[in-house]
Image 1 (cartoon, rainbow, N blue to C red):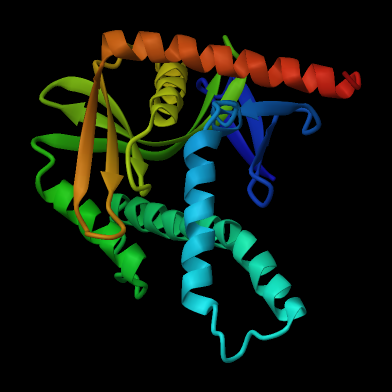
Image 2: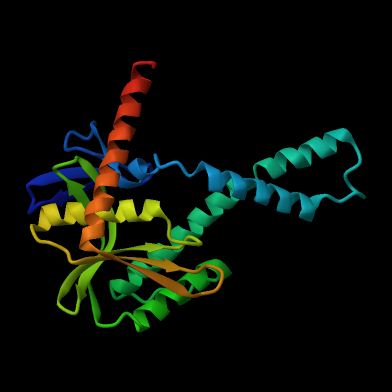
Length: 251
């Protein structure tokens, strides 16, 4: 596990990279992760629609009447189609990780090769377009571990910097859009950094890189909106913890 020193060495946490789990100094007590808390936000309605759509597309592309003749063959392809959304979800996560890693290396002064895969390549192209047009933004930190002493959660912040003398913090996304869940995630990173750095950040940014078209979209979040978003994040964190308690007690 990776040892992480925070708050000028006063706080030590550990990160299991393979399982993406944070632990306290005893290496036994888990720390709630930012994304594990925001996962409690109900996204079932749009996800169900997308899953059904992906199943339909798979059947359209693979239902060959010349090859599928028996009932068992029909059942087999339908069962595969039902699982298609899971495969695509994993694929999208892998592409997103590839884009994030490329951006991290570039920010740290490395010279990574442009990805061969079309979607990852488009994400990188979108990032480079954003870098070119980022308007006096200087990135000072990238992929920094964060921990909130007040709320006891941990995570990994994408970046922070200075823009026209203002302290700013941001998150990179490679999804098809910018969703509410992302606002709550960013507020968690924002809050933890303010706790540790003992200074206030003026604005937050969510930068979405298009895997399909190589374009980027930016959402600027003023401080007053961050305060509201943080309240929502803390509520999700409380829900996660309460559900964990109920599960342990068999309720």
